[in-house]
Image (cartoon, rainbow, N blue to C red; front, side):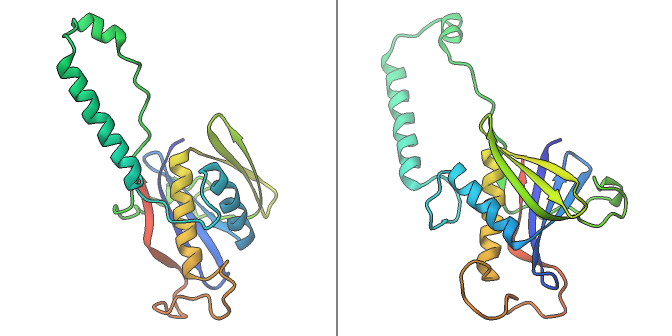
Length: 209
């Protein structure tokens, strides 16, 4: 199964986050995350992505890295113009094997609501509450074992791209609702009324193409 879209929302009544995942072409899974579980996930993903303790937002490549890539590209192009031409067979033999590209993250595409029949937990099933979690790295991925209130478990395997998406969404929302800032007061954003049961942040979803 492949995760295609992620969205993180806030349930004001329960003071919990809701992680929504669209999987493959027609399936989905929604999970309710407690504050402790969200903190644990961020603490594991941060070092996995080599993020500083200040937890900056994750966007595109830094300008310095982009500049390095541009210089490398122009240098290679100049070298190609100066070097004698090689036969196609020799060029194909010398060319390194292409590594598969990771899916590109898209924060603009609206989150797609899937048909109820696609619920991985069963038609009409409520999102389970994740009460405990474990984590370990495996083959360049981060593998979370999530335990629900009914003691059942679910394995969530995150590549670097998926880890970046979840981290960014949780971090942005946690900052808005002041979960880990130590600031007292209501956790409901000002623009959201008390009657709103489910709040979705402005950058509410990430799509992988």
